[in-house]
Length: 410
Ligand SMILES: *Cc1c(COP(=O)(O)O)cnc(C)c1O
Image (cartoon, rainbow, N blue to C red; front, top):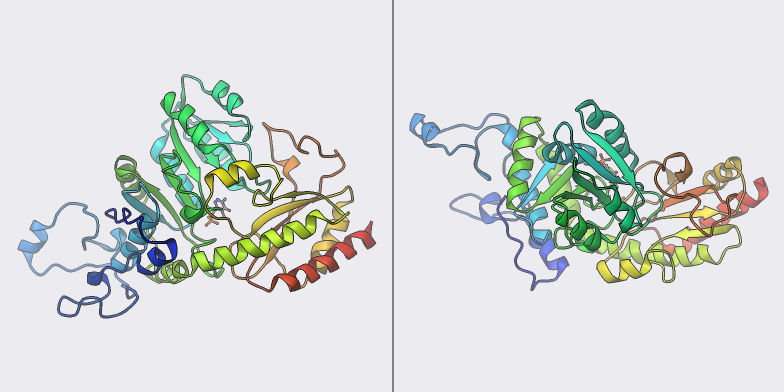
């Protein structure tokens, strides 16, 4: 979709309210902008008035009716809105999930024989993609310490074609120096792909910070209601065009019903993120003061690892962070999570309801230390929290009950 992202004079909430609501997508020629939301255009077949109209139709142009796989105004409005929120983007491609977006982006950038450098704190399915899908297509993935720019530079070789960054990283929340890593990558001719699901463009303008392609799981913050899956990749003109062609080649398409749900979630995204951030910060501070807790992994927390970079580069946060318990056992952690009544047990995040899941980074990482330097080797059992929109005091009461169950089970 064409860029509408140069109106930086307006604040983010104002832009979220207006994004993607083009008059021609919310009305008819004689009554443009007749309704607030782009209607759900359920369509596989698109019809032409006559043969002359069919023959005159431009080949593969954005925002033009052609055939269902290229979408209709509901999907165009969502892509347009996401482009408008991403400074520097010329367009956004939608995918059926965040993982599909990651696969779509990496398969656009990489060719057989290439090496991909992947941050060691990447989302687990991204790691699995490196070991599986990419390897099967003759692409080699190597992992690097997320917080060591020198190790990253040293890992670049002749065949390195791209780098996948994620900041803060899944589970362990390290903030990467994206501008510095991207500058190194650019100097060596690498393409920079960034998983920006945690911050979204509201908290981290990925392309401005040096990424070539910004990938997001819309399933999390944009949906915000735990009932819909989708992914996106936004980029400047060159990569947008390539992403779009590759997505078409792979047959990616999203349903108009899901696009409408995403557009609905998008309107309240900043209000939700701000509320979750404030609540998460208060809860992280409370956890920091607890004797059962070894380390709170939350870059929004003053004094915590990554906070300086977070303050320098980010304009907002979200409700997702982790903490590591002091010593203990896996069974005691199960007791902690089972004792929570307001936190669901589930693998997603970014919804209006709070979630808790166990975190065991040691089993996953290959290129960086865990436990983190300064942490006791016995401090192995982590919990990831996705803070939703419940009242903070109630969530703290719930966690207090959980920590009591942990202590009782030791
Ligand atoms: C959930 C998630 C994804 C994948 O998104 P899906 O929509 O679940 O496929 C990618 N990256 C991160 C950081 C995630 O948390």
